[in-house]
Length: 113
Length: 287
Image 1 (cartoon, one colour):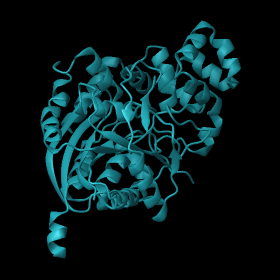
Image 2 (tube, helix red, strand yellow):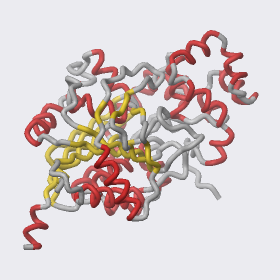
Image 3 (spheres, chains in turn yellow, purple):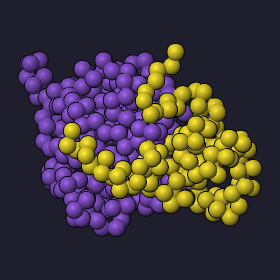
């Protein structure tokens, strides 16, 4: 049985296969022309990369947890977050259900452990 | 013969690159991290390494899931810093040291590793940020050899495998007949997690254990599995493997010259640690 780690999705073979198209699209964002094309017509760009319905819905919802569930990998999703202008604290706050201020405080508090 | 003069391990958080580009080094948020660098730069200016061997992880710039190597060694004449998709400025290209690359590849294959060999390799912030921190004028006085350790696609190589890789790389470097000074870099860490409902996880106690082990020897860390490291250091804290490999390459006398540990930069427990290395004691023993 796979090992469970609290609040963490292990990006193993199953996730990598499930998320392949989504991650492939995100990988394409290393090229500025592709970032532009995505912003110009997101639906057409997602068609081009053959995203699944679950992946499209996850992107439409803006929920990072749903994108991860749909097979998104943190390292590739980061490129999408960059396009959407989200920093790691915004993403952290969203995933933990905290305000950005509270999330930043949580980080600071761990210095005093 | 080539000589390993030490290991410099450092966090490579993308935000560091942006802070450098914007000149924020003296802002209160950034100062504790950037203040660790002047003494490191003094040491570099004194010791003058010729080649820097990086143990690092690619963040989806050079490698995709279509072909994801567990270990990859660069054997390029030049390494190009490329757009990563979210705004980190690129840096001037860095010259490689192909002779040492092949020395390492030949050595580690002989020792049972199966690295991917790369003659073209784009490098990301895991290489560019440490270089800029070491040499802020971006005039690189060193050549580099990058050794990538998979931190994206599980199963990841764990601490024991990365320790053994480091041992094999160290052996190959020290068998290189050129009279060159080699500095090792463990790039990444320490504890952090960007994804999932545990995002923002930091583990000061485990980081401290690792920083201590970097001084006395990282063999005790090999009792952990890769998933143990995910649990203890966070999903992206697995970059610790790069530190373990770099430290394992040094088998002589190790002295800690500098350590900074600061929470947080971005979502990460940041750390900079400089260790010097000499084989003097072993030579004396042999004589």
